[in-house]
Length: 185
Image (cartoon, rainbow, N blue to C red; front, top):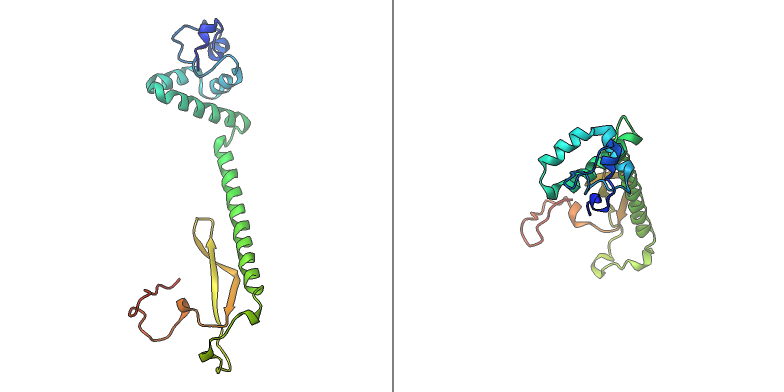
């Protein structure tokens, strides 16, 4: 950002404060004359003196980020005097939670439809199991991400398999022997 004092036009801060914009003005690089409302908001919320002190305490490479943060907070505080940017953050967090719930529901629907769309004839029974009259049905419950980020049990996504699923096998056989490890989900 070029200093506005080189154009013989005072920066937005000096214009607002009705003072002469000196060549070393701390505000000039961050409050150009084309953005008077930016400084007006920052001044209204934080005060010019406090902003000057803050900028003087920071390293020059940190000042632009600090001014952008101050300007964002000031604009949010002007729009919402009670909550400021915290109100916007809360709104966005609630929106993310709502969308996560919608995504969970859509994933549950996809799983439910993917298992109901498989025709029974397409499941081939191995020759050794063909002599069994009845194959016991195993149940499992799908798990999806939740509001805190990971797994919750979905009450709407229970599925049956016509075969024994290895991760729900409750036989007395020792699963630590013979490859595969065997953690339960």
